[in-house]
Image 1: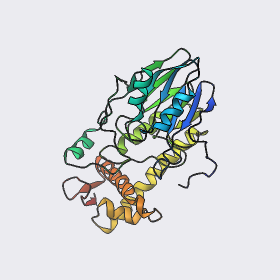
Image 2: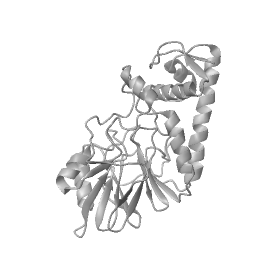
Image 3: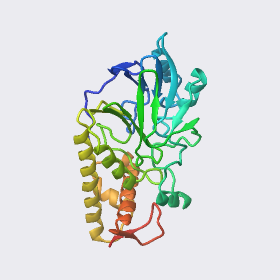
Length: 303
């Protein structure tokens, strides 16, 4: 999906999204992060900082500069432990004294089959895991985090990463990397799980959201339409993968070469992990079968 050209925020400057919510974009643009990571400040007095972002001194300064004289940071909430979202949390906590809240460490929420893949040696291929991340307080699905003038509802939305959460803010939702407008979310085993990702999409579909505030890119003003697009996008990929297997056994890399024909070569490793995520999901549906022990290089056939 081609990113829109009209999202060009001023990096490092707090911008009001709506009452009680501001956004600061971190200086870490890349093909995986778009213009940079969105850090959100929630509240008017005691603030929650959502996704402090990468370990970057300029971004830490920008966050602290956005805290006005009558304000202080009371909570630091990390949606998931990728290197573009969580590493700055500890420095921000050390500076402000605020505790770090998250679903858990880098392996929390990982599905059984992804634990098997990790045990078999599969690693890497994603946006980079913050392996040292450890929250001060672990959150659970349905928890409510409260400040003087705000509430955030914790929604466990694994798929992009096992410990991924979204945060309900009234009828708005901070969706982090689960739902973005500029691209579909990366699902890279063993950290990402497509079966979980689809379940999380349907979970968000059950609510009547007004707007999504993603971890990268502009707000999504038609949340349900975007979720429907993501679900159908995955179904389209699934059909293409199954069609590719009509020609005989193939690895995830073979299928990625055949299916992601318009993808830049530099992004093919990520595309290959997406294909592997689909193949594992299709295994669970009894639609494909690996001819080799399950791994990144296993050959698959249709059942």
